[in-house]
Amino acid sequence: MYVTHDQEEAMTMSDRLAVMRRGEVEQIGPPEEVYESPSTEFVAGFLGASNLLDGEVGDREDDTTTVILSGGGSVLVRKDRLNGAGPRVKVGVRPEKITLQPEASPVPPGANSVEGLLRVTTFVGVSHQYSVEGPGGSALSVYAQNLGAEPAPRPGDRVRLVWRPEHTFVVRPSETPILEEEEEEEET
Image 1 (cartoon, rainbow, N blue to C red):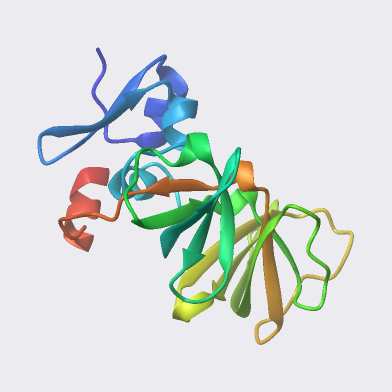
Image 2: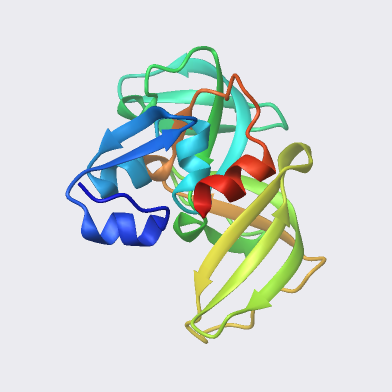
């Protein structure tokens, strides 16, 4: 057993990891599974950045479920990613799973998308990091590899965030607020 507060170290050195909060286990599993399918809002934010949108479970089809977003619109979620959540949920997608497009661009068939206003563009060398004001004023992050193919969008641009439904995960909203001091304490 190895104990660390360094999330990257935990993911690279482990076959299985446990994320704990306030002395209780939040989730145990292989690093990729815990990262890609966090079971709680805390785990989603603790292991890397996550975009979380409030929503309510809607229509259920064969393999997918529609989640109606509180800020407007809806997204599709694979049924196996619902994590037993109740009617009120938070829908998540990791920033590196999102493609940023001009708002007028067509949405690929079967893809999830939300519209927003690009607030901040940060060039990091190998990538660009974008901060977008999304549905209902939500703050969303997008990480895009620097391919140099097209000019980067600029703050003030209306944009569309697009991702595949299989990259969408669902968590139950936290019953206890996650305080900034707690996140800092857990990360050190």
